[in-house]
Length: 345
Image 1 (cartoon, helix red, strand yellow):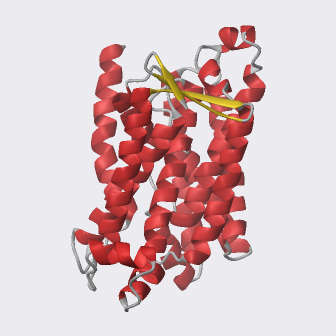
Image 2 (cartoon, one colour):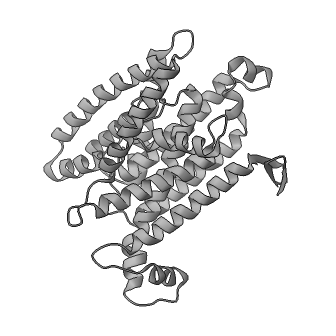
Image 3 (cartoon, one colour):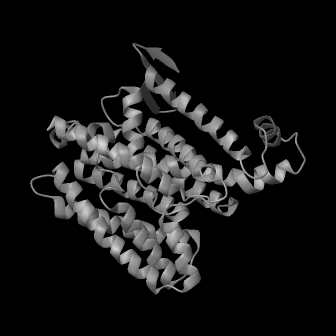
């Protein structure tokens, strides 16, 4: 890696990655913050484990009962919080970059609700299973995204028209979701109702492994697409002049973005507002001109880890779904964003 004029350039084989020094520092700080938060969170609970003991378990020097508590009970949940948060952060960054609108996140324009509809449909017809539920969520999210974009299209995508159509689509889909839940048997309906709020409770290594594999495949797909996203943010005319086919690239990024939402929804339900807030907060920290994926992923992981700690510890004996915390925090951020956008207009 070499630096020049506040830039860091990393080359691996024929692939070159360029980022500002500030972005690299911000991502490093966020990753350290996520790791510290995870270590502290793993030690919290009815059976407390000191951070030093958590670290000793992780390095293999502690063979006491702490090992069972840390590795089997709590670490999978913290890893899933980081993975789901990172997936939502990247998905939100992709949607906001494609729409060139800070409000164009999957939870605002109804893609989250559509993914949950697809997951519920699979759950109601063929039963559970992570891959089946994730496939249903992917189909539901893609259909919703295509419909919202089609209904919003008029000489290009107008930002606020897209938001209004997305909110309307989300409202309709939420009604459909409630109807499906009512038709389920009692046990499945209760599970689906809790899952609808967004929860990380009860997640084990059985969910961490497929989530990690699928997330790695989607990241590989993003790498394969190359540096087309920053070019798309310049506009279709500029992108075409630089050799990028805007429509083809936009569809490819849309599929990856919906895939990330589907993975998160299949694992933890439709968690709201992380995809909305993470890219914009990361952009403010890095002072970048466009949406960057790595800072958004790191910010998403930090936000969901902190939200999960609040959800577990706020009422001690009565754990909240993490989605309830992200909605409370994200609602305040959404109001701020709406006011900011109104002033700009």
